Length: 271
Image (tube, rainbow, N blue to C red; front, side):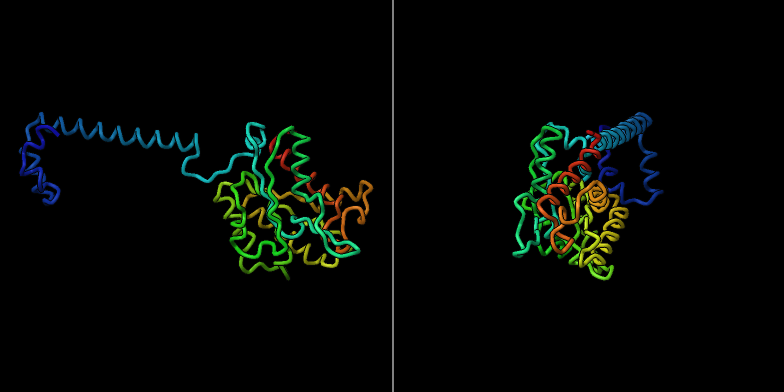
């Protein structure tokens, strides 16, 4: 600080003095030193403001320090291999109910999603199936994902949702956890059949999924409406649904994967 700090007495304790003593100490300084101090303070202020401004620009451009996910367009633009995780219950796992019992279909909807994106966009995607019959049993179910993901397809499980209640807030907690990891989250509801034995629970779960999508500002892929459309186009329930009307047939899972792929492509503006 030049001449200012040549006054050792002032240098060591000026911050501790009362206002009148501080003023008296300042009065001892000559005009040239005061002007130099003012210039230094001005430059320091300019430097601080400039640093803050540059920091804001960097944050705005790069997203450093935020968990904001990329847009679907940037993820699916073919510049790299997109990482997609499918998180949900036995429907995501690929369970179907046959005359001889339960089995996993050879083509689950995550596999169909991968194939559809490849055919439509001519890109390879890394799609992981984290479907589990236990579903989203706890607030941290998203942590079962073994690898980071760009996009997460999240299908809430109505098995953990009865009588219109989710007392633990499992769905919303998983959405928040995924968004905080920087994932772009899409919710998918249940394309249950009109004759499903647990139709009431599935309907209530779908209502809750729609509410969560709105509350958390994530996109809902309305598979129920999509499958109702397929039934109107000539498919039968037997074509799409297995015996319980909740799980799907091989054809049903292929159509669910195709529907989700269409939703991603549409949201990315690539169709």
